[in-house]
Length: 149
Image (tube, rainbow, N blue to C red):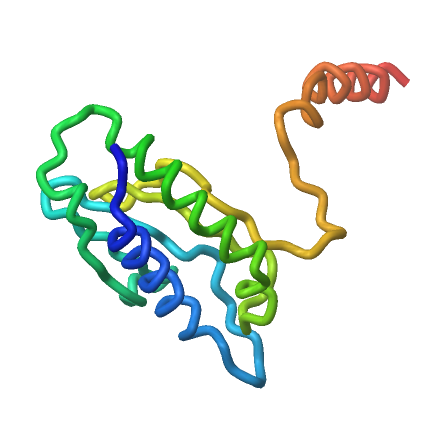
C-alpha cells in the first residue's frame, strides 16, 4: 500500500498533535505508553495515552475499507517510519514524560500488536532474547549448586 503525501502529512500532524500535549515546563508526567490504533474499516488513526484519553485522531484515506490481511504489518511499517523521523528530528527529546516510554501499535481490542518505538535514556539496558539466552539453565545450575551446599 502506497500512501499519498497528504496521508503522510495527516499521520505526522496527528503524531505532532499528540506529543504537543506533553510539551510543557515543569513536572514530568508518568506515561508508560502512547497507543496508536489504526482502524481498518474506517481508516481512522487514533492516539491515546495509558488512561485511554484520546490525544489525536485522523483519517488515512488509503486505509478506508482496505481488505488485505497484512493491514497491521503495513500500518506498523508506516507508523514506525514516521516515529523514527520524529525522533531523529529531536521532537521527542524535550517531552515532559518520564523515560522510558513507548509508542505502541494496538488493534481494535486495544491489544498490543507491536512496539513501534521505545524512548529512553542512553544508560538503560533493554532485555532481549539474545541477552536472556541460557539464563534459565544458569539459574537452574546456580540453584542446584546452592541447595547442595
